[in-house]
Length: 302
Image (cartoon, rainbow, N blue to C red; front, top):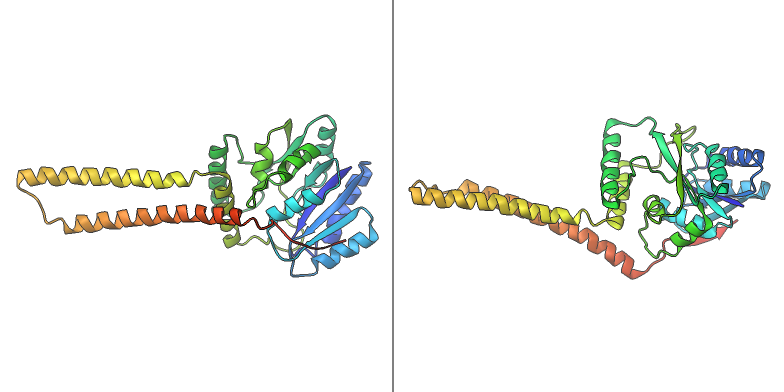
C-alpha cells in the first residue's frame, strides 16, 4: 500500500480538491493507497475539512497537532503514522503535480528505495527570493557533498528508508536533506512547480529566514567556520597595520593614529560579536536537543 502524506496549515479551501484529485489519480492507476493529512495547528477550518473528507472516504485519515510545530514535524508525524509499504510526501496546495505520484510508484515497483522529485523550474518568484533560495541550497550542497539545488520535499520513500529516518532522534531534523543523506538506491523524477489554485502561501519572509537558519545549523557546522575566517581577516589587517606602524616609527613619520585605532576596534568588535552570535545560535540548538522534547504533540486523529 502507498501512503500519501499531506502536511496542511490553514488550507481549508483546497482540502476537498486535494482529496478528489489525488484519490482520483491513484484509483485510476489501480494503486492501493491512503491519504494521510497532518493538520499542523491550523487556525481556520482545515481540521473540519479533513474530518469531513475522512467521513466520506475510507481512504482518508487525519492527524491534528495540539499547536503549530512546523512542516518538518508534520512530515515526520506522517511518516510515523503511515501504514504503507512506501510513502510519498506532497504539498497540500497541489503545486507538486499529483500525477507524478504514479510515476514515482512505478519506479518503486522496479526496485528503487527513494524517488526524488526534482524541480525542472521553480515557478514564478521574485529575484530576491530566487537569490536567497540559491544561496541556501549552495550552502547545503557544499556542506553535504551532493547537489541540492533542485531538491524538494516531494519524494517517495520505501518503508526501510522511512524506518531509518524515524530512528533518528534529532529534534531539528531537515527532511529534504536527511532523505538524501541516508543513501539507498535512488532515482529522480522531474516536475514543474505549479501556481497555487486557491489561497496564498503561508511562508512569510520571516518564517523562510527562520526555516533556512534552523536547517543550515541542524545539518552543517559550516557557519561556525565563519568565526575562524573573521579571525584570520582581523589578524591579517592587524598584522599589516602593525608593520606599517613600525616602519613609520623608524622613519620618524609616525602619526597619532587615532582614526586607525577606532576603525580597528570597530572591525574587531563587530567580528567578535558576529562570532559569538553564531556560536550562541549553535548552543541554543544544542540546548533544544538536550531537553529532549518531542518533535510534535498529537491532539486527535480521524
